[in-house]
Image 1 (cartoon, rainbow, N blue to C red):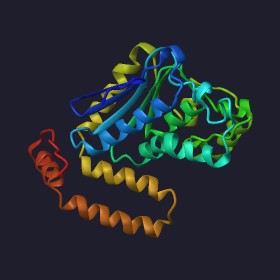
Image 2: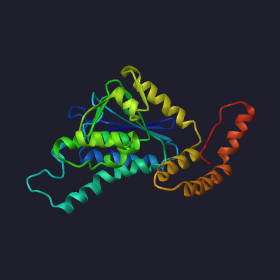
Image 3: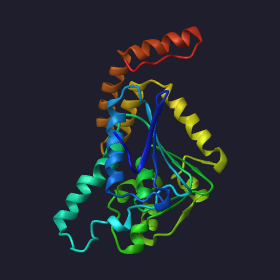
Image 4: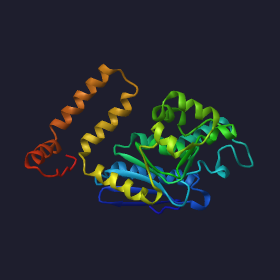
Amino acid sequence: MQFETILFTKENGVAVLTLNRPEQLNAMNDQMNKEMAAVIQDVDHDDAARCLVIKAAGRVFCSGGDVGHLPSGGAQPRGAEDIRQHFREYVHPVALGLQRLQKPTIAMVQGAAVGGGFDLACACDIRYGSDKARFMCAFTRIGLFPGWGGCWFYPRVMGLGKALEFLYTGDYIEAPEAKELGILNKLVPADKLEEETMALARRIVQGPPIAQRLAKMQVYQGLNMDLETALLMAAACETITLTSQDHKEGVAAFKEKRSPMYKGK
């Protein structure tokens, strides 16, 4: 597939999606959303791709939705059902796709992540950021509800009180506070961000794919279930891993004092 708004590479198990509209501050239009959704599906179905890194060209990670392509824009106002359909077609496949992707995901945030760009970063499992990273719920500043899932993502990433504070105010969250709140897993000097993010991705792809996939599934599903149900689900998941070739390889590698070679079987 030829891409117009993103770059996409795979190497040694690490898939990298690069937002590539730097002149537009990587604002997301319909074409970019379609291309991101296609990449997420590709990674999900490719057994050789074990981790997805989302990064961006230029100085800004993502400035949110392209104002010129908002569903409320255009010469003719769109009806409510048309707007809802637009979100189902262009936004939901990205937000849901990342959350349901059976592979670990990392956002590499080198600059501002605003509006939908903030939500995109929060949709990833892990976020590494530079000292130039900053976050803002820009929807608030133009009288919009965060349609990219911010009201679901923010409380899970930073806790209820802070999530509501930033949803109400639209204030910026600078990199040090983002690290303190857990929005950023790690704060890295700008000139080391790519190196450290890719080092993490390479570590992840050396891990056991089946166990990672099941762990991600239960973490997200466990947010909405009671402990007893989660324990029953955990028993089923551990049964799967106990009977896997990866488990046998892990035990053998431990006994032989070598690094395991997991194959996802």
